[in-house]
Length: 319
Image 1: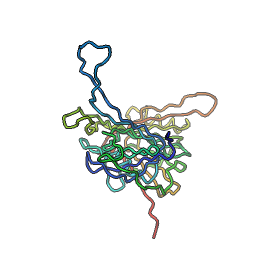
Image 2: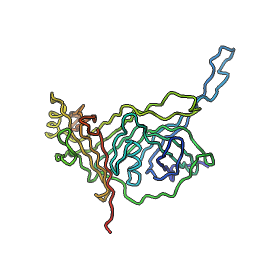
Image 3: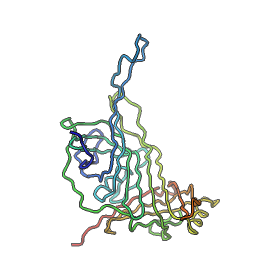
Image 4: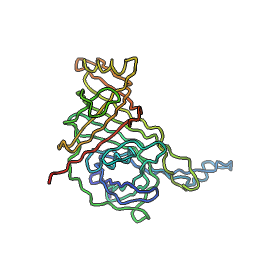
């Protein structure tokens, strides 16, 4: 019987150790996924008489792909901890240099066919925050192996339900100020149409060793890259911003703070970038309508400040 996408489930759980799968603890608000397992098959390359390859021996097994989702409070903490790498209470920052990124176990039900993917590392994270819309995201991941039901380490789908609304940008705010400022000091706001935040962990696959067998070893995080892209109507304010932070000979950085929430403003996320170097800021005419502008920047590591900090605030009902 053919399978359909409706009813598919993706769940995840942060592992305590490499090589040990865990039972999922969160459900991801999935819109699409592309996790695939491929087999690399090689041959000796000998010169024996033949019209095609005379062998295709299994050399390696690779698992990687992407997940698209709509962000919800129930899995945002797992997402930021595993994508950023470091957690202190409800505040998430990038993992230290030479520190491993967290790994997770993914369990996916495609129709009624369930697969388990242990030792999954998030290589990159992108958040799309359009006005009057949901916060949408995607992650690029790399894993090790694919386990079918009944195999050692395979897990089952858990009974995990969503109870809170998704994050939206109907009341989102983007404020800015002098680079190096603290988040609470930022007062000037931009009326933006969309903000895209992207984090690339620079995770590299290590060279294979005898210990790895057919599977990938643990990815090694490298130099992280954090970018922000802002879309908004061109205006006097945008031109002033452009002169101050793009064309200023002193090349000052700008501090940015993005806040979005569910329908309950107390259930919110604050993303703070204290030192962003603006790389582009344009406003070109493309017809008779509103002139659109795009501002792009890269988060820098300056003055011992974290290049990006995500703070997750959950609503706690009063008793």
